[in-house]
Amino acid sequence: MSLVVESAAVYARISKDRYGTGQTVARQVAECRAYAEAHGYSVAEVYVDNDISAYRGKPRPDYSRMCEDLKASTRDGVITFHLDRLHRNMIELERFIILIEATGADVRTVSGGDYDLSTSDGRAMARVVSAFARKESEDKSRRIKSQKHEQARQGRRNPPGNRGYGYNKDHTEIVPAEAAVIREAADRILAGEALRSLCNDLNDRGVHTAKGAAWAMTSMSRILTAGRVSGQVEHLGEIVALGDWPAILTPAQTTRLRAVLRDPARRLNRSPRTYPLSGLVRCGLCGASMGARPTANRSRRYACNNQPGNQSCGHMSTLAEPLESFIIAAVWFRLDTPDLERHMVESAEDTDADALQRQIEDDRAQLESLAALYGTREITVTEWLAARKPIEARMADATRHMGRLTQSSALDGYVGNGRLLRDNWDSFSVPRQHAIISALVDHVTVRPAVKGRPRFDPERIEVCWRA
Image 1 (cartoon, helix red, strand yellow):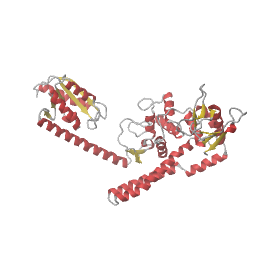
Image 2 (cartoon, rainbow, N blue to C red):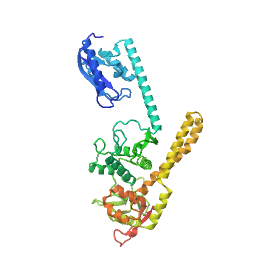
Image 3 (tube, helix red, strand yellow):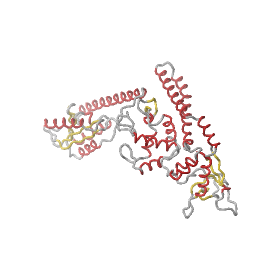
Image 4 (cartoon, helix red, strand yellow):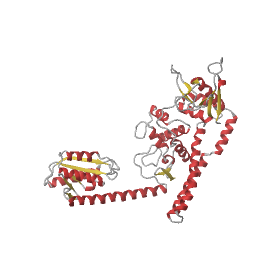
């Protein structure tokens, strides 16, 4: 073991810097410098990893850089406040031991003594210290998880890290301008608009996230599906209780948004729709779906696409603009019919969102009661599982019903008021236009053309109405 360290590396780390001040690592560095001065060692460089946990195995840039310098022999020793600042991971410790054995560097600690890793006794002591540090981290992690779970059950939100969009730092007050964005976004998604279209519009308007960044689909989806924005406590991804802070959305809206945005069939990476009847047009000869297939001169059209492996005939096509204009006009007209208004009222009575939400909350409370009974051993695990299955099935069914309410949401404010829709139609994105059309139209069948009739003949078009 060297008697003098001529080019020492001082290493400091803290797992959690709550206030971003770096004060704790600054104290570690000061103690290490004082130790070096007292022992006559020369400090060549200070390496600091602030707000990074060694227990969780996150990359530590300065630790990696220090090891590279030791390997290159530009550093001949390490001074740290305690060995647990270097490692709380046995795998990392073993790699460090191999490095120290190869380089002959010294390891000194301010509060934990020196470790001669070239000897079996020194290595054994380092392993013991690291093992106890690991146990301390695991115990702390278990206590924190237990505390968070208990807070969630009591309806209290866990202390926030970064400020959540829509609220102040303490999550006790709503930020009106941001809350308005969340409400607008929720309404537009429930009305059938695509996330990509929504984010593009907000970015074009200069509306940014809490950090001042542009909106991405993932960040918008995360906010809209978070329990916190509807005053609910979320724990491990599941809503477990009502919270004690003001809500921006209703719990029913959150349930519906989760059903829509977490639908496995939903694809976030597809291109925005450019054809408002996409997926709704069928071939009158073979019944296959007619997709978007521009002509050679780039005119938009719908065509039956005969490809290997499918049963489509490939003999039917129609220009997009006249077909879309015909269907859109029919939708406007249908919105003003008394039968549709009566049907929508009856459907709303049959699938009331608030009633479904109350059912979900009641079932969630029943699951909590079951868990408590199992915890006190008043029921067996077999009884608990048997009672839980029908409750979870009922919750899943109610959630699916909530997701289906999105179609009727696309028509909110327009049933019986087709003129309003007509006046605003051109301002809607194509995905929103598609959502409104598909809320009323199940499919459109295009029949074969009749010789001698106009190129676009309304007689060829058959609309199957959904409502």
